[in-house]
Length: 192
Image (tube, rainbow, N blue to C red; front, side):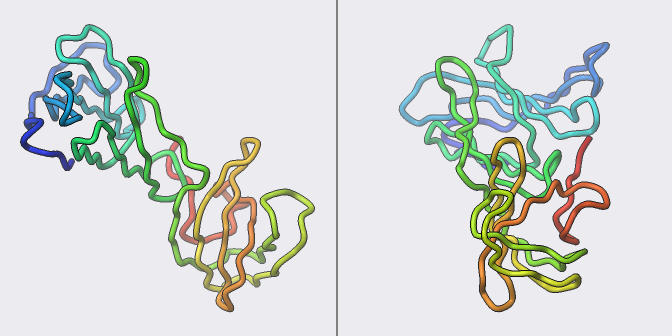
């Protein structure tokens, strides 16, 4: 966890809660998340119901959380946003941006999520001009070829990856990153 020490204080206080999936939560940070604001918050952490790192944001003295997000690392630079690095429940180590909007914690969604992983193909992969079935084929990549998976984009609930070949061609391929159907050695869904 990274934060501006002029705005917040690190905590390490565990509160045991009966019937909580992780046995309770740990207060990890208290203070402001924006330099120009007097609003104070508390960030709590727990392992979630299936060992998924989860952070919950509470207003100071609040009875209910204003939101939660999964994440392995949190960066709070003091500009009113929370930046999250998360590997759990996704197929790569992604970066997210969160904000408080109308009293709720919301993700500022990105059109694409940076992946940046060089990996071998597990099977032949067809790279398309657009992230859509039936688009023009840009390249056919053989099994075992090293490629760079550049970004991920979700289109109609399906995950598409922009891939760069060794030659430098760029094209899209759909991949659920799960089970025997996945195309890349180092792009694999980790979660439930």
